[in-house]
Structures are given as structure tokens and as C-alpha cells.
Image (cartoon, rainbow over the protein chains, first blue to last red):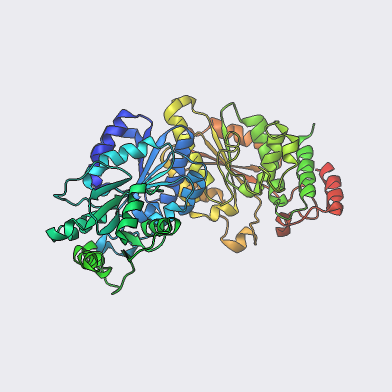
Length: 300
Length: 261
């Protein structure tokens, strides 16, 4: 989604002269036009992400609206302390854009994947996390992030085409109405989940499908009712088990004293073979590809 | 009034009141003269000061107390339960302390963003950003990222100061990673560097005034050679100076020593 991000971000940066864009030496073949358009407000901060985050905090203190950008692990796990001390403790208006959440960087290997970013970022004070599900979400996500006068982490993933008619972006939205099982998905793995659900037309009406794109979240009463009524909950996320959607929903189930007939949490469980591969390879190893999701959905 | 003496007396008196071993007295006494020069002779309205070596917070608190930005009552709460004044400055006084420090290596990067923002906004009338680091702090990699950034963007409104007392938390600097606060290193990173005696207000004044006037297009660094624990004979130049509790005996000795500086 980096090209749609660049195209949409230009519009914001042209309109608002307080926007500063700092990149950790990333953006080849995507940000050239942005650099030419906003000129001195585009800063290549070099391969120096710790400095980039604290410089952004300084810009915010001077009254600007800085956005920092790099590959997702380099603006999350690598610089967690700068984010906490210099940005979040002060509730500064800095946006953090991480490209390639989950296994997006495939063959680049585990150093370039991020499987715990939501958990890490959610542990920081004042931080909001937004993970677009679809390419069409990009424009509203940029708008939403800009509207918040506080730190926001955007988990940008690869945009995948879909024939599914996407409803307008909301932090939580219902995608499909169904009666038998409640399926709640975080971020762009909604594409694989929809592929699985739409494999079998007869199955489609069984699933009440929800997409979560923002944390922290207030679980809407309608979703709580859905979980209570179906008694079957399936969670899908391209993230490690703890600290993200699974944890939030388990809290909800306990807080609302809901008893479940079945529960499945499809999440990242690790590098099983210790081998390199595409995102699809890693999803398959973690039973997160559409075929594996389909098999879980079919279970009683 | 001799501020060098009176603010030192204040530091040891406040530390005595807390009976805490966390006041970092040695570091406070090594940088207090630099703070006096910066706050009372160098800073203009809207200039900013960032205490990157946050463990010397008590030195900053007594300066702000002298300026009546921290009341006597508030200063008396230092390190007591429910206080706003902790071992390291946090985000609860954003007007006077813009950055929560304590973890070393953050201040120069933050100062660079602030200084660049001011330059974008006010062009040639951009205010100065003073940033005080310790020599031990220059072990941190982020300091050098910040140095590269500041030089690349010609942030000549940054006045960085290193309180070079040659001692860090558990060792003398040469036993840890060596002298990361050397003129050669900082010059090679593109800074305009001046060395001075960090306890001589006249020398500090000359160094800071000269830095602001010369080498436009370069960030400035003052390497202020200091003595940890300066003013209390029994702890000067000693690693323990940052860990001592000021008891009654040491308080009385200190007050006598301070009169002689």
C-alpha cells in the first residue's frame, strides 16, 4: 500500500504546510514525487531511526506535524524507547508509518518481519494503532491519523486486490452478516479470510464477519451480541498470540461472561521450518493462508 | 550574590533534606556553573534548554527555583512521595522542561528537531537550542546519529555542551569506552568545537559567546572540562560522588568547602 499511501499523503502534505515527512532512507520508486512536491519538508533522515524519532519529537515541540516512515520493525521494535520517552509520554503529535506489517517482507527474512508491533505499540501511553484492511482504506486512514492530535502508528501492508465490495473505513466494521459463527479479523489478512469464506457459497451465510482496524478499541454491543448469540468465535490476525486482537477479544468474552461452544485463534505461532519464503509461505506454515483458514472455518 | 556558591549550597541542602543516595550530587556540581552561565548570561527569550543528562536534574531544579519557576515549597518536595520533582525530569513541566530525560542519548536528537523546526519557521531569527550532555552519554550511538543529522542540516542554532567530568556511572571514561567527548571526534562529525574550563564563568562566557558568533552553518559544541563533585573536597573526582547521601557531617563539611571555591 506504499504507492497509494504516497499518492494520498501528498494531498495532505500540500494542503497542510505544518506536515514534515521524515524517512529512514526508504521510498525508492514511491516517494520521489512527494520529495519534489514538499521540498524541504521532506527529510531523508538516513539509516538512523533512533535519531529520526527524537527529531520528530523536536519538530512536534516546535509546532510541526511530523510523520516518520520506514520498514515496520525499524520504526517500532528498534526505536521503542524513543517512541515512549520522547513522543508518547509527552503525547506529541507524531505519526509513525511502518511498511510491511506481519510477514509482508517475505524472503527478506525475520529481521524485516514484525509479528509483535501491535502488542508493543499498544503498550505505549497515548498511542493509537491503525491497520488498513484494504487499499481503499488508505485515504480515510491518513485522514483519521491526521485528525488525531496524538501519536499514531500506521501498519501499512501490501495492498491486495479483492472483488469484495468494501464498506467505508471504520475502526471496526461488519463485512458480512451471518448467524452461526462470529469471525473477527485484524488488518489486511481480511483478504485471505474473505477468500476462505467465499470459497463455498453455502458457507457464506454462516459467518458474521467483522474487521478491526484500530486499537485501542471499544468493542461495540452489536459484536458482543454476535459472539453471545453464535457462541462460536474465530479470531484471525497476522500477529503473535498475545497483545493484539486475540487478547482484546478474550478480555471481552470474560468481561461479558460469555460462554463459548467453540473458540479458534488463528495467529502467528512462529518460524516452524526456520526457512525463508514468501508471505504466503509463512502464512501457510502458520495456518494463516486462505486454505488453512477455510479448514478452521469448516470445523464444528 | 555569588551564584556559584549559593546554588551549590542549595543543591547540598536539598539533597540533605531527602537523605537519598539518588541525587547524583557529583554530576549536579560538575554542571552547575555551566547552567549558571547558560541560564543567566546566554539564553534569550524563547531560547530552549534541554538537559540531556537528566540525572543532574537537581542542578536544573535549583536554577528554575532561582528563576521562581519552581517555588521553594515545590523544591522542598524533591524526591518525596507525590512530588513533581523526581530523580530524572519528566513531562509534567513542559513549559520549562520540554523533554523527559534520564535515558541517555535522546537530548541532542530532540534538540536537532526543535532547532530545525525553528529554522524552518523563523529563518534567520530562529532561536537557539542549548543541549547539555555528559561525556559518558557520548557512548550512546544515537548521539552520533544526532551529530550527523545536525551537521548535515547546518543547524547552527544548536549549542551543545558536554559536561566533561571524565567519570561515568561505574568507571572513569577511559576504562569504559574511551574519550567519546574529544574535540577531534566532534570536529570530524562537522561541529564547531570550543573547549573551556567548565567552572570558570568568564571562560564559559567567552566560549559560548564565541560559538554563537562564529562558524555559521555548523552546529556548535562546547566541551566544558569539569570536576565531578566540584566544591566538596571529599567527593571531588570520585565515582562515589554520584551515590553519596548528604548526612549532617558531610553537609557541614560541604558548606565550609563551598565557601572556598
